[in-house]
Image (cartoon, rainbow, N blue to C red; front, side, top):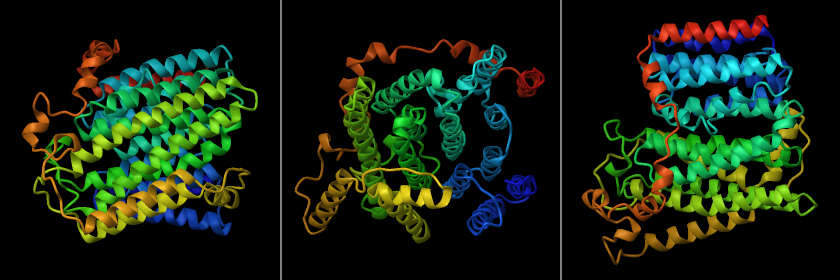
Length: 477
């Protein structure tokens, strides 16, 4: 992209000082204009750049999105920066953004770990020097706590940052080839961490982080493997759209109620939102299942590593059903909490996002064909996601049946039809036994808690100055 056009993406960050609403409109218009110029040939845009800009526009639909940080993140993602500077700039941006919210401790600590390690690996001549920064931005272990903190403050920014980092990994696959097995293993571990934490998530930030870890873990596992390139490209847009739907639906709920246990029964007042969320969870589940099947299919050609990856992914897919069922039940089923339904415009936006997401996930050959047309990317994949098609048909039939059926039982603990007091009681949580069985695992603490607390008391300007100095040293070296 020509540098002269980068100012278009920087403008919304300045406009937000005047009006947040106008900044959102400006970023949407700027992104649409760049995509239009790219489609008509007036501007040269690579496929990753177009995907980043499109994702930025979609994530603006989240009412809690920050146009200023989104515009700067998009700017860094599409700017032609050399070497490791794109990932370094994103790390600095995260530290600055969280410092503005008064919560910079863990992000600054991770940046102070990842950037010097990147410098050392680069100085030693390793091609995969940016691996620590990349893992930090994606939220992979041991940096998984950053995603929860980021979703608690900025939500949609976490999606865009992880997308940019993974596109960088896939675009430089040859450079990261020596650590490709490690990246794949960390992606699988990331999925398992998401499943375990999802069983006990109590707030929306934890829920978003859980879905992020499960979905982006599969993307990380496939990004550095050439044999799974078509799978990686297929997963990109449905992952972004799925998280955008969840953020959009939950972002329309009252801000004062931030816990999953403070709702219930919203499917009666927010039917479109409930159906869209359910379809989104089905898309995520079938994406994981398809990823496992594709990996096993590649492995049967002679590489047992892919068979192991596929089996692990299928286990995560099966466990993710419990996580998605739990999240959906606590918010949309049970006794109504009296929350006012969303506006008609929001319902249209959610339904459109969910429908487009289901269509793209249902027909991989069509979506990958669009990639080939727009970004000149050659890919081959099966023409239909049969599992998703069957799941959508089953859901449609169940909706048609329940519309004309009278409820035979108003309250049942096992299905989530319970009052808030029961859900918060000693037997109210569906997965209390899960927590008791795996208590030793949940007691494990990453040894950054004390350092994070100490760093949080440091003036953010001092922390940012230290990180910026390290970046300057990286450039000089």
